[in-house]
Image 1 (cartoon, rainbow, N blue to C red):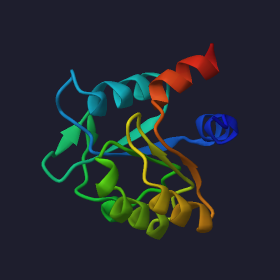
Image 2: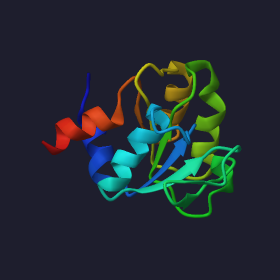
Image 3: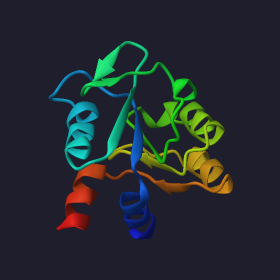
Image 4: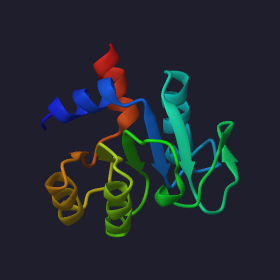
Length: 133
């Protein structure tokens, strides 16, 4: 696995939009962003069913975000990824990270063609722990 985009993303990202943010502490869609927030990243929960998460105002979609977004972290089934990649490109995000178990090569290729860094099928928390060790 090429770790180069991972290291670039982890060192350069400040604001992370979390698609599929969960209000359940036992789910990766909650504890991974919580871990990242504890390490200084600004988390924007993206979930149309929530009003807030981790003390931050939740938004219903990526296009509802008004701040610049460095990284879009995706917790969605692989087949559901393409529209989120389209939105990430639309809002000018710099990179896409599909969590462990999530990969969509067509969407990844589209993101890369638009100039975004892409990571698929990797846990950001695990990789961040390894990178910062």
